Length: 327
Image 1 (spheres, rainbow, N blue to C red):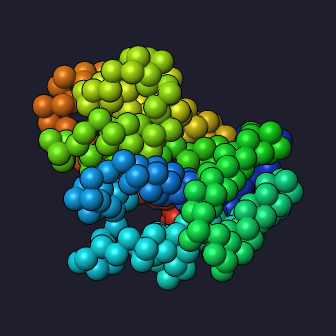
Image 2: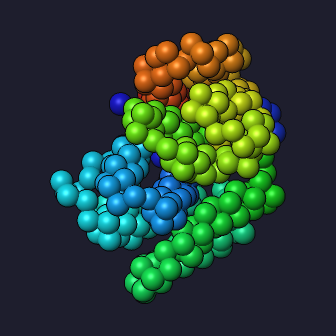
């Protein structure tokens, strides 16, 4: 037997306990919004780069995008207009932008008392804008405006969250969700690109960097010499760039340690150990060694993220009655 909606995470004296249901909603609100922003960015970059592509490169491009999102194509033959609609405004597709924003809003609605009014107002406004746009011709005639609205909406929500919400357990679960989702999405995207790296040209590698908001940051670090080896090093191991796997792993461990302290856990548990193992696998990694077995390395990172996710649920959200009573 498990308890979810009624179990409370304990905290230090003087702090308010948090319902595990609330932690669950905040965690998934953050993950869904990050997922929507990532999908919007990938679609925006790939549509823009189509203008410079040879016709035969189009099918490979969109299959690579779908692989990077770990989504099976809706049909054997890729109809671009249909595909964009399916990934953007099709509410029957649980990976579409509209679906993800609606799911983020629903999770926020269930915990309105735990987030600031500014957070709710902005997320609700973004949801209404996306819904309204999906019923108009704007997303078809000016898709870049639609994707820009989603990206800016997500970035503004992050800023509003940091500025208006108390940086306690709830805020920490939001950061955990964002960091974990970002690691998963970046590793999947890298795997999709490097599986076909022999077929990629300069523009494709620039597209990868832009898909991770990394082109300018990469150029500041490596100049404009766009090399697959250097891109992998930057997106996997850079400790200062917010969309690198190592940066996100550092943030993930720091926030999970903060949650553990706030919940009154005296010693490191399974969640913190798994997050520490993920971080250590990146802290001591060398890009030359990684590139020799990149696919297995990325698979390992992805598996470790799944283990962290399962441990978060087991320890903080869906733990047993006996465990709850012993806390």
